[in-house]
Each structure stands twice: as C-alpha cells, then as structure tokens.
Length: 195
Image 1 (cartoon, rainbow, N blue to C red):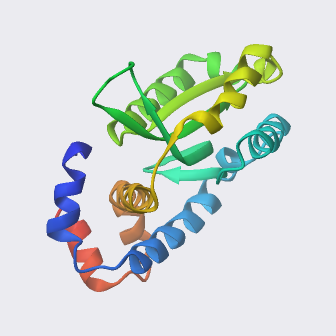
Image 2 (image 1 turned 120 degrees about the vertical axis):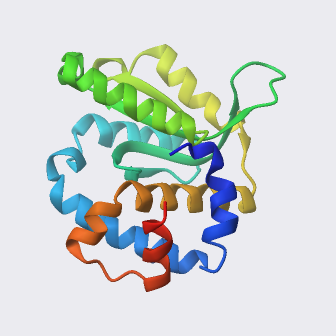
Image 3 (image 1 turned 90 degrees about the horizontal axis):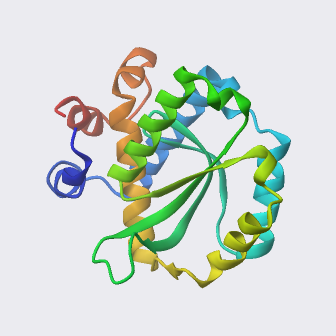
C-alpha cells in the first residue's frame, strides 16, 4: 500500500472513528506484538543509555520500543520536524533512532533494516541508525544537543502523525488481528479488511 495515500484513506474510511478507538486498537495490537516478538522488544543497555541521554538533552517526549507498522523502533521522538535539504518543501515529521550492534552487520538484518527505513520514510519519518560503540562519540552527542533546536510539530500535526502510525500498524498487522480475534470495533475491522 502506498502510504502517501494514507491521509486520503484516513479521511474516507476512518473518519467515523475517533482517535481514542484507533489508539485503543493500536495498544491491543502492540501488546500482542510485544508478546510474539519478545526478542525484538528487549531493551539493551545501549538503548537505556540513549534514552536517558535524549531525555536529558531534549526535554521532549521520547518513546522507547514503539511499533510502527510491523516493525519495532528503538527510540521515537514524534515532535521533531526536519528538512531533508535547507529550504526544502518536504519536511520529515518525527525522528526514529535505531541503536545497532554487531548483529546488524549480517545480511538478513541489513535487509530488514532497509525495509524498516523505507517504511518509516514512506510515513515521512526521519530514521537514523547509531552503532552501539558510537553512542558516546562527540559528533553523536553534538547531534543530540542540537535536537532541541529543531522545529517542532504542533499538537494537531503530532496527533495526525500518531493517527497515521496507529493506522499503518493496524493495516500492517491485519492478519494478526484476524488470527488472534482481537476485539476491535466491527466497523474498524471492516474498514481494515477493505484495504
């Protein structure tokens, strides 16, 4: 599914659902995903260090182990807005940070990482990867210190981003929802089934 059309699909098919019903459905799916993928959601000491560092530097909402689509993201900061190039019309909303160890040098992991980054990019989210041993590097620390100076999404834009993330996750896990017979509103299930 082309995620650039998600806003249009949002308005057509999901306009009757309020954010709280979609958020609850997302939380239910995330609980199942956490149970199934315990190894992916395991937090390393490096992720803990990064999380604490970001909380110290940014004073923004920083989330750990977030499901976006069928992928688990180590660290996510939704309020950040970045431009790909100076004076660009296209801005990326949200910052996903992956903390990678040696396992990510394996070819199968590289392929998964590439698809994860492509999926995040299709949602308009900036994704970066930082090696475990680079967390204390001066350039990485400088990047973290600059995050508070990035533009921030307003409340409405953050809410829209969150809704798109929730819908992408529900759509990506449609078969899991049906298989586990999760109790989502019937009309929401029907709308997901039509995609």
